[in-house]
Length: 265
Length: 265
Image (cartoon, rainbow over all chains, first blue to last red; front, side):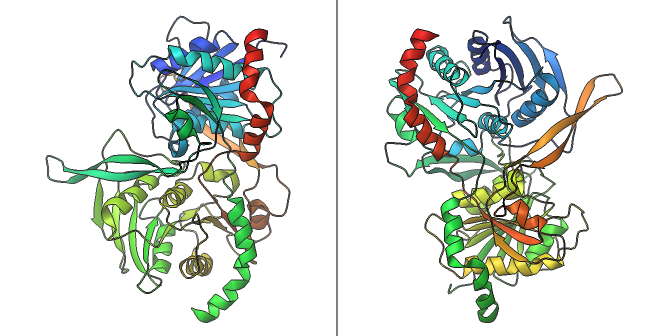
């Protein structure tokens, strides 16, 4: 790469979160940094976009680094779209998101604004990486994570990108990191329950709570890596087609069977 | 299936939308119907969940069918979680979402609340189908779509489900339907632009606009099927691991290369 790379930084914890400040700090050493991030926390916002209302996006300076910054009233995915379309001087060389306060491993990527920003950049053909630290604390220590963030971003910037692009979901243990593992997403889910309460007027309301369940005990998953002290690196994509089921449906002769169903049911 | 199937119905256009009323009408002929749907439009909400505030979920009756109904202050994914956890007498036999006012083909599934509800049900191990009509009009004619909705749901209810479950994204042409096709998600994206305006106080704001681009001209995609008058049926999944890239990263010796990067950069 001849010129200084252009790096887009976003997150879902909001532009003032210590996690994104740590990420900006590392990125300033690697390129020309543009931060376009939500003006408020957006955890659990997934791949939401703002269609039916307006977006504000204002230039700000949160700390004293060399980055240029904008805070946006929308979601992380809005931030990526607006950055590429209206703010950056050209398509960025990489988009990084995070460092999230808390894990985005396995099934959690479905709900994560941090990772949805990474996927959106992937859709745009931009190499992208989401970083999450396994510590929900606002005052979490991001220092041990910085070394791995720097290494992974350098790797993407200075090596040939596979045809079809690359998007990575990187989770980082809180401390005592043993190394890194390339992983697949573990089969897992949240077992939900809702805490049912009554408001002062007697109307029922609910708080979402739940327990995380990992069904997947194999050693090639992100959950395994993290449990065993490794940084997990999962390549992710945005083609949700279930190809094995596609083949099953075709072999079932799904369409022709409708003729029999019409007779039988 | 010995007992009457239990059918969970939701959507992202809101519980009073004509599309969900058409879906409820068909489902009442097939089983015991529970509607748990947002109390307001939620298009573009993706896989968002409500974590930092409360949810209301109140029993309502929108029209005169045999269904039981609840309107929820949260997102479509919240509706699925709350329905399974607190409302339904048991795990449903199927979850259907829609009928969406407008297409959810190809890349649009990333942004769609309708399809996120389908994916959430899939995570819970529940067979699920999202239906969308290629007509954004609030007063769209859902009658021609009903026949296909009924056939597809019957097929899922009365045939063995593949191991690992089944979730389908079904899009239905507006009229002159030729038949059905099993498809993969087309490679596509939105080319965004933002309409930049100024509020009465002079502050800049933006409206998201954009043009849909289909890069994928092959005949096995949902875009092809729809363009040629067929109902498109795409099996979808929630494992976002990019397996081809996983293999490339492993063959690159991604981890070992860091040692050289440490020296070179």
